[in-house]
Image 1 (cartoon, helix red, strand yellow):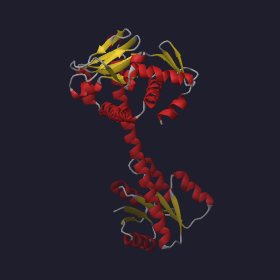
Image 2 (cartoon, helix red, strand yellow):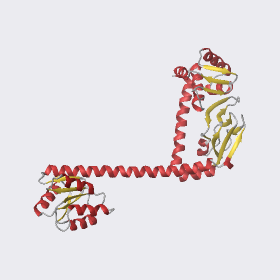
Image 3 (cartoon, one colour):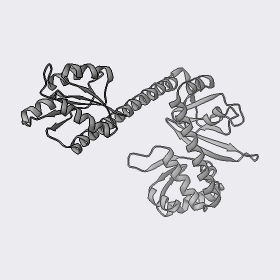
Image 4 (cartoon, one colour):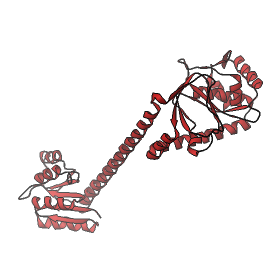
Length: 353
């Protein structure tokens, strides 16, 4: 139940207002002058104050001035009640912080409407303020967590250099570290019994790898190899988990990454199972383009072996080479040794879709 303080020196008016508000299920406190009203406001912290302007002892302007200086009462909505209608009087009250004016005489509906509007507006403002504070706290917590993570990955002592085709971690070995690619390009892949590779992911600057096996506390489910000379930050398992357990925002970040990985892998498996080779090669080229940086003119160019492209596509090397030649003849790609340049990405998307 909302509490309303009515400060009015006229007994009949004061009792009439109190009766109307009580019938509308409000709890009402009353005061016959400004000094008593201020004491009641400080002790009870009402949800709204209705105050006459012209009163003995202390007028309405004095009441709002005192309440506005007190941190506990400054935010209480304030409605002036007056027989005065001069613009100067209204402006003076508003300048002091009044939220509304009721001019005598007024009817029941005018009073109740003014009260409901002010209470509703104050409630919305309060909720908005709480949301803002929650957001700030969330941002602050996330910032602290990200700063701690940033400190880990920017520690030069943890950064290792890997040559092109050098293995970063191997499938089947117990997961012991989290890897962050500072600079370079890396592929993750699985190998079958016939030593054939299937590329599970392509990664570049700013990507984390190896976290799924690390979080499951199992052996690495795939291997990672540098596609070019790369710099990788290696974060020991214990330090990663210490940060993960102490900061919910960091934990949430990696859970979202895991969810995205699961969704992407499901989609890739479906495409491998049902799409034509032409669609799958187009999909693989677009995957390269999305995973690695484009040139300044918007095209994508990279030296990428046909074996790796075949392992992404799920087709033989010969089939991939033949399909690439078709794309070249159609003007969609340019081939220069192992270098592939995508010239018409939209046409590849059309094939994929």
